[in-house]
Amino acid sequence: MDTTSTTDGAARLWEELVSSALLGTDRRPPTGLPGPLAARDVPGALLEAAALHTVRRRAGLRPGAAAPLPEPAPEDPRAPLPEAARRRLDQLLAGRAAPSPAGRRGSAPDLAELLPQWLALANRHGYKASPAALPALLDAARARTDLRPQALRLAGPRGLWLARLNPEWRFALRGTGAGGGLPSPKDPEGVRALWDEGLFAERVALLAAVRTDEPAAGRALLASTWSVERAEDRLMFLDSLRNGLSDADEEFLEEALGDRSRNVRATAAELLSALPASALAGRMAGRAATCVGLDRTAPVPTIAVEAPHECDAAMQRDGLVATPPAGRGERSWWLGQLVEAAPLSSWPARFGGRSPEGIVALPVADDWQSELHAAWCRAAVRQRDPAWSRALLGSPAVPPATGPGTSSLAERAQLLSTLAVEQRARWVASFVAAHGLSEAFQLLGVCAVPWAEPLGEAVIDALDIAREAGSYPWSFSGVMGLAERCLAPEAARQLESLTARSDEAEGSSPGAGDYWAEAFQRLVSTLRLRAAMHAELTPTPDLSANAPPHLSASAPPHLSTTPPPL
Image (tube, rainbow, N blue to C red):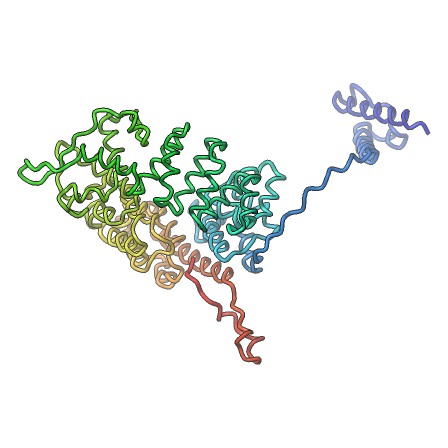
């Protein structure tokens, strides 16, 4: 049989069918149709012939050469998720609950907003994602950058292996969540091999792991290849030195002040200024002392300020940016940078032994107070100094815009982040009690989750007061969303009484009663769901080792241990 002529004939027939379909069977009737097809109506015969010929074309294709198989996925020694938690992850990855018909959020929990907490708890327990969940997990991390560190950690080495096979997941290869496939910091050969040959994500995760285990070894690892790293990689590697930063890092950071990348130089200067005993901190303290001091000629002790008149090369090498942003004067710009970088421990001696509270309370001459206090706020955040943060925060009862050292809630939120968890919660609880919730959103966002009891109670009381007053309910939707994620799950019992629809007060917003009832129902449902998520992820202790023989096979599941709630 002449296969060439058969193939050519089939190709011509296909071209004929395509031409007839494009031009229309009236203008170009198809020819060469098989007898049974040609006897029927022409358009139907054309379609049936095309279908028949399509099957024949596909069946006649010769298979191509087999592509080489990918390398096997690496092993992940971590424990698999419990079955209930695996199903819960699938549910959370599927997305948010359907909106209510009225356009409101409805009373069902927002599943997408609970995914970050679920991932954090699963990683805390050392679980790994199931292979079937990896594609959806990587898709979620691609869509939401806030999920990436925790999602990639849960995905582990198999997630990175899969990401190499799909261009849409390439982001994972430059992230920091390599998770699960790193050599032990105690294995110098494994560490060296991965540092020299690993992907960027693996190298970042490796440096963080070694730095956590032994800061000096992490610094030495970075120094070994520093001169050949790309500028953007040097910046991220340098940022990892924040973990375990100490005076031993000063020499390396001083050398980084001469880096050819401006961003690297700025980061090195910032890290050095966080070391009060460093040479850079001393230089900045000396410069700041020539600009800020006590005016003893004034009727009352007053802070006098004389801003710098230039920003010389030495100042620029130490991290000062010479050109101010639009709308800022040069001298005030330079002053702010100097005071921010000077160690806060140098100021009490400069002001006659006064405490931070005493210094902040001093008047400042010539309208320099806002600039000076703002710089001290940035210094307190950079140097993580709780004493100065408390002084600059002042009393929570003081109105937000008139605090002793702050001009915005954003600054107060940053200062709060330097305080201990309990102090932070108490301060914000007092602020909410004094000013309500309309000004507290940013402050609530820096409090540890779950909110400590005084803060949780203050938020619930403020929401109840707003409901009773008939306040415009939608203005509290942001705080409600935070409460769903941050209140302790045990608060659901306290909130039960608020889920019923209350009578609307005279002058209240139309529909406010329905909204508040729906919002509290969603809040209670979310808290209960968080409690269920926690229970599903909490490992059940092995009771069989110590239990009597007649109890070991039937120990009730409610005897599991209970770590802090989500």
